[in-house]
Image (tube, rainbow, N blue to C red; front, side, top):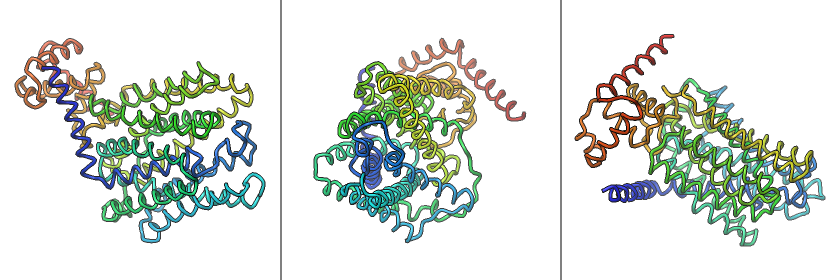
Length: 497
């Protein structure tokens, strides 16, 4: 019986994913093209200069070389700052025809300008360097603007579909981007240009008639999640340190490791979240961050070799990245926050962390030497990841925090009773299935009803209830109801303070 249920669950999960992708093929295609473009611009040598380009693979970068290398990322951050600032101060979200046309023009024009500069001895000619900076800045701004537009799409389709499409789109994007390293540069640039144009057209087509765009002057109370900002910042720190180290090992090797890790991370998030129904707290801080920390520790152990640790870190990074996209969709839907605000703030903290990671890695390797600096830097990042995971899993946000939401479920807001049930399930470390059963038990439903609703055998439900009682040290349905009512009273008391 258990084997049959497991096979049914696997088939149901695959069916749900396939159905979601076929229902909105434009979202799947557009996100795939977005990932291809963004990773080409910020994580490969297909569209920008890398550390190896500006100084032959050495980490000893001069000031001008460092500016050239980080120019796309810096303009990317400024693009988010502009959009976030426009909404914060003016409640303004650009959406007219001129705006929609400017996004792909900035991206494609900047791409071809940088390719001209890279192919014309950019290290020796000041004018060509300026052209490269102009082109890379245009790419960064355009990518930020398109990123926010796809953030708005995430708010439209909701948490669950964002996770499914974002993760599934990683597979074709990673494979295509890896294949582009084996074609002539002119061909890869042309393909990237088409990707940017089509992705922009699809995003603007989806959001054109959305009330999120039409109601651009709507007054909302902006919210700022310190927990989300800290999560994005620490994630960015680890990315920055890993990125510069992998580029030092070779551009093609770095890209292959990153793409392979990204694909595995995306498949892992679908498997774990859909199959086990874990909440954001457990997925992010009990699995995603520890995987990234493990990658950093492997680099420390095997330094100066970084390939194994870099791959493991890429798995954890993409795992966390997909979940944060889904989390932003949840915040937009359930807290009324605009994409220009949520996406800009979260990504700005990610980029700030990335800059800190790059600087820390550069400082450690410059002062201590490559091998010892590598060990010290990655050990520091691993400790920061684990510390953030430890602090973020506290119970302070159990009443209304997004950490209790499962990305495999819909983005419907929970009532106070259900929030209490989830809080208790988290506190007593119930499994996802036990938490479902407990919520029905606490509402007074009989075992037969629970069996029908969850499509489980009566004996299976009975076993779940027995384990729940054992973990929570209770003995009956009435005890479960009393436990939830007591938690409700404590929340009401906290609200009066």
